[in-house]
Length: 178
Image (cartoon, rainbow, N blue to C red):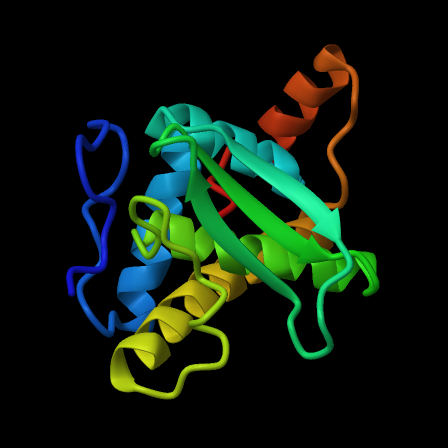
């Protein structure tokens, strides 16, 4: 099974990930996604989903719901491939919810949901393809989260007003955060 976005690929998205990508390949892929999406620190997960959805031409909606014990989230395509949904457990911490959203965004970016497929079965499966999908999605989530956290710890939060933000960018050297 190929593990990348299927169908028409916007030219701004990075090249698809191979099967069982290395951590370095995942970091490079995430850098390309964040750059293409125009995301800036601090990482706002739902804003990143909106930007990635816009890039892909398929909005991504995040929904918080009560899920069965042991299930924290899943993603699926809907409306004849015009929209993707990420469903997240409502009864967990905000930090955990953000990580779940990043994990499911990893599935979406890696092309694990096609047609009206869902990632719900992947989280409990133990065969090689399911493990590869889980590893890739989790790697994407971890890279995005750790880079955003490291940037925030190094530089602190960005100012809200545009004038202060421009000065802040100049003092930070305008370097990439991921």
